Length: 504
Image (cartoon, rainbow, N blue to C red):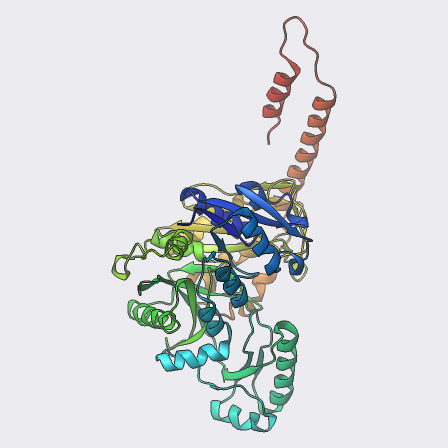
């Protein structure tokens, strides 16, 4: 039985995993770099292990250091979260060889789905719909034109080991083919240490829809419905929602069946996500499988009532899934906004720094998965995501209005952030109508134009001035405590009384 889990990650996902551990009576172990000594996941965990300097290559990506921390702490299992080593087959193998439980799929499944070209072949053999394109790698430039002509322009050249838009090139004509092929290979080699690329038909105006799957080691595999992920900027997801406004009951059933078939084809165990592209005629094609928990998993949890982290731990413990496909239903509508420490007025440049004030939204149907707090300095070394804001309501329209309200209540000062950008998206006609695809942001350039908001700027300035006034008065109270005269209150009681009065 799993009694202690080391969480090989940081930030909001580390805290998220630890919360489920606490509810299950399982101890959690944090790992932290020099930059994360005061991070929330370190404070929240039952134990914490220092693993090295701030750069992730010397800490969160260092398998030896994480394994050493797991063994010294007496952990039974390791949860990788997402990012870092979560889809590293060598890490999963090392965990198993050390006699620990890797809370995720087998190294073989990670390898099979981690390489896009290999995954395409497996899906073809399993009868899963794939985007028309090559089955094998492209090595000969002389055959490029012949291959591209057989697929039909426009085409996409993609890195087999890629992700995040790296090693990817859109080719609309033969004149662009060779140069795009060479650039894609060069970028893929630099980013992933693997320059293998392949070609597939470019789907115009696609919808990016993914299905959450969960499988145990007893042969049970289910899907927990879809997530619409088409609001993207530079191939990075910005907003997700479920159910998808594009979906029909028939399409959901067919895509769900193929998602389950994809997982079964590699004997998958644990939580994973099968991603599809869907065209305007509702034809769908396998894109890739992420062999880990997704950033956007909370919206699935909200509409299904399933704690996906607890389910991960349950199946890693060798138990059967506590639910069957026919028992799973969707209730209401959920939306997630990713909030980053980036400046939307300056080409989304990262904005690390000291968080001087933060007020997170509350109220019915609102959830915030975050990790920053007042006085915390967001480091420059890692992903700049501050938190994920999730709302739920009975209907999609109500969920949008609730998200607008939650974004209005969310106040962060000290670092630039993407809240104004997210507010604009919530007001965009195409988003509100549900009539959007992966080109939503480029089709709506006005969304990127963040107007000067005098009220917001004045409010931010007022919060900042109040914060300075508050800290100065606290310093004075501590350095010059009042004397106790004629039976008056003690200086510490006076300090506590005045502190409560000074709250803002």
